[in-house]
Image (tube, rainbow, N blue to C red; front, side):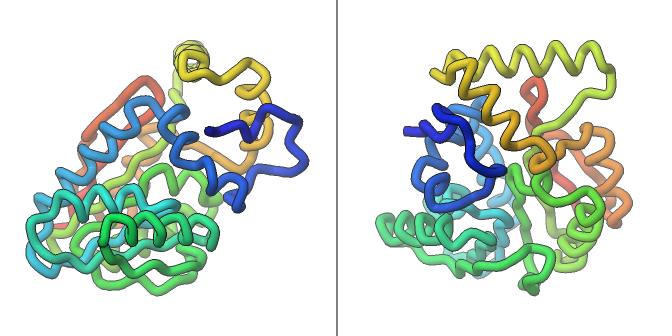
Length: 235
């Protein structure tokens, strides 16, 4: 169970072995309707996949998205997962092995690793950890690796451009975290640790970034207060 922030953090947040060990629990308790979003993203991804299609999962962490896709697919797929934390990928490998599933797991920086030509790319809660100056470059790289007719599905925490409403949404979200068992102390310590590490955009900024990269159309798959999932189509 996630107890990472029950004590004063000794360093800025990073996806190390300590975090990897509790990451699934952290996601379920920190991201509203996380499992439902995972299922939704998988269902729409599969609409654009056929036998031997290629799916790339960026920031794959413990492999939950890959397992969700593989468990629902009725045909073989070429699955790739990229993450820069070896401890996360080891968890992903163990999970895939437990379910007798296979995927190509690559340890490296998503900005530097060469992407396979893909039919679908997924990045759930990943872009928000990429420095803003490099984020648009990454989205362009994703666009370039997609085949014609391919799609990019992303989920992100977002800010609201109306200051008062943004504050109210943040407070509502924090109350939701308390309902998941996090204390005020843990919530405050996590926010402190993530400052300047997790940098969210607004929904409008995310959409514009996708259009700037060349995507012909974007649509919202899901939104809960300050969390969204978008799908972008390359035509």
